[in-house]
Image 1 (tube, protein in one colour):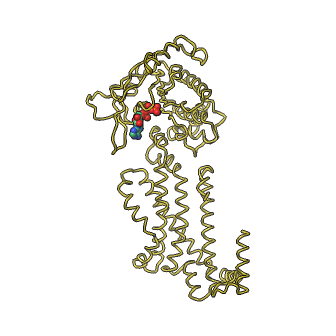
Image 2: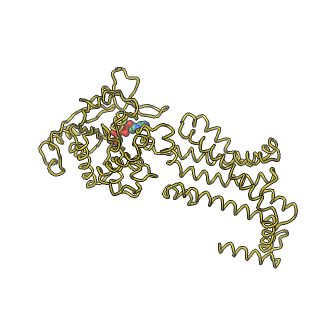
Length: 261
Length: 247
Ligand SMILES: Nc1ncnc2c1ncn2[C@@H]1O[C@H](COP(=O)(O)OP(=O)(O)OP(=O)(O)O)[C@@H](O)[C@H]1O
Ligand SMILES: [Mg+2]
């Protein structure tokens, strides 16, 4: 069953008065419920724009010549952020509320929806999932970059989303922290069964995490390739990265992005 | 503090021994004596209460208007575009230049003083609120949108706290300006308060008393600022305010 459906998507960026630029045209793909899909592509190709459309933060272009442009999440057209979708932003420094403690940041999506006691339970649960249960009362600025990104992940998980959209969440982190967080994300993915759409420009990361890798290219961009990753789960940094399935998928992605030499 | 004592000492010596032969310049000791008389037997306390009252009331009203209007203009690009040019022009006129006009319209009254204080106090609050709101990181606004917060919720949970350091700067500048305008209005318009006390002392050729009022106004400014700082400290987390009171 498809959770996200995207058909012939067109999207423009630019200021209201300034010149608009067509970034995405004819983007079509589906993401199944409980699937982990990565979106890859070079910088500026429109990955963030695509993710913002899925999140309901960016409206698809209205003046489509073919009027079959469609974005649906669990069988409903996306118009504004859909219920059950969480977004993890690329830049954790500007997406946490610096005046709130770690716990209060994670609590934000639950306010007005759950009782105080239920919120506490969810906050503790989410912080445990990202391994930050002991930093409950810390202020965001007291944490390292990796920890701040974990807080953002916990905030996204607190509302128990059906789908998690992530925009280069580990792009700014060092290799060790990154590997750590990748494994943590996979654990959460397995435990919760959440659908994940993950944007990255790290080929290894995309292949390691995903069931499928979609490659975005061109100007305006569309999906130029779709590479399935057959490596079995659970995956581990050491074994999976040496498995023939992993190497084969990585090779394919390389081919698509850099061409065959 | 030590510097102040030293200055007072030198001043005392200069005046006592007529080294600086300035007519009507009282020695610090004379000022102290005048202050004592004015506090215990005179009008200082009543005048002080009047000026504090008008400054606080005017500043409070100006702050509510300034923050409210600032939120509106900061959040709505349309409202911002249509009003910013006229604001820039109006703001460039020093509020003091409206004193004669206010005097003509409202006469020698409390109303005249309040209008002037409120008008002047709005600007710093308004400009800093707009600036604070417009400089909020777009990601932070997206966080609110993603969580499908209502507009009042967004303002309460995201916009106001994010803009707060800038708003507090505006409130602080506004408070100083309100005090200045209250004293000016009392000097030329409303015959009450510290400003009027100052003028009366001059007319009565009592320079020592005049200086008592000058010092009282200065101390009041310091006290109001300290009060605001303490209030802000109590309500806001420490890190948000670090640079607000640095200057
Ligand atoms: N607000 C904007 N105004 C004008 N152009 C924009 C705006 N936002 C993005 N763009 C342009 O749209 C294109 C797609 O941007 P987008 O952020 O989606 O790329 P990306 O693939 O996420 O890049 P990166 O990997 O660097 O994050 C870029 O060429 C960018 O210059
Ligand atoms: Mg991006």
